[in-house]
Length: 427
Ligand code: HEM
Image (tube, rainbow, N blue to C red; front, top):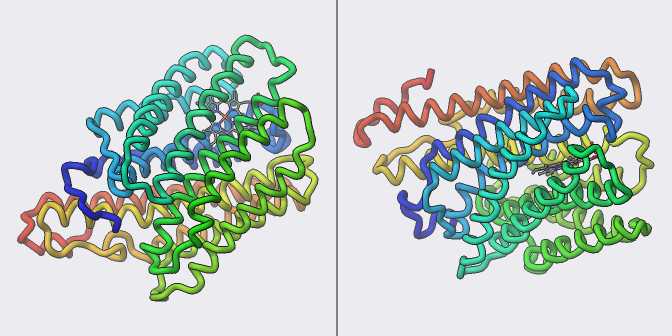
């Protein structure tokens, strides 16, 4: 069970995950601004400095930000791995990641190389603190579930991603793009996106889909073997990058495994045991369908530009799922903390954030995706419409999270026996 045996002392204060969740959409707004103000030819060219800076506004500012925030809550809750000084830990990781991402992306987008040293220092502090401590705690866990196993692999892949990132950053600092630069970069990309990104999503899905959506669990073979197999394939494909060998066969296997995972996830969500409507399902289903489409695109469509694949994978798959996950985690946290403090009646998800607001956010988000996706086929003009909608959708995401946070703190300030605050609007 999600909260089995967990006391309030073990869980970090609610401000710990909240600060990460509230920071991520701000980086989303920054990406929208880059799309509005920089030429499309540079954004869609994966080798341009603008593309590298923008990619990391997403991978560090949004993906890592939400994952780090969620992990600090999930490790004690799902794995019993308790961080000793949660607030200090969160301060170091959050500050390092926020500053490091801003400096790193600014140094590439505005070609201010002198910022790279400070960026790497901040990112180094944040990533090493997070991964060294997480790996240590996860390795000590006695009761191993498929989620704990996936988390362990995710954490090791994350550490590798950062280390590979530091190797390639050195090439940029020293202006020395050696013969293996793109082998290191490709290894960094697969460890980052498939290891750090997908393995975490798998670990979360194995637990969250059956539990939060009262749906059937993934088959045991998928839960137990798939993450390990994918993790091993990351080393194989990276080796092939260095040998300059053909990777198509490994690509086929990886894409096939990801599609199997998505198909099981979609099947489970479509055949829930208690089919109550829940708006976060839209985010999950969109994400899993986009995952399949992005894999088919990766396999069968020659990539002149990585813009389409990037949008399908990063926003369509990863960010959709992360937003759905945050909308599920926030009410759970509020419930958990209020319950542990002795409040007998605690808000449901619908009390915390109005469902209509989440629906409007979803429609804005899907519309932005639509305009991004038609841009390469029709006209560059559409990237501006997409960017505008993307900014609005991120602002809505931020506002919805703030509403929930304020509602929580309004209730938490009252006497647990006094129910009147429960009905007071947050604002
Ligand atoms: C410590 C953190 C990180 C550092 C220092 C770093 C550094 C870098 C650098 C210098 C490049 C440019 C490679 C080139 O010369 O083309 C790069 C590319 C890339 N990185 Fe990272 N990275 C970090 C974290 C991540 C994470 C966590 C992810 C994914 C989850 C990621 C995904 C990518 C991707 C997709 C590219 C390719 C960008 C493109 O093609 O335009 N990085 N990284």
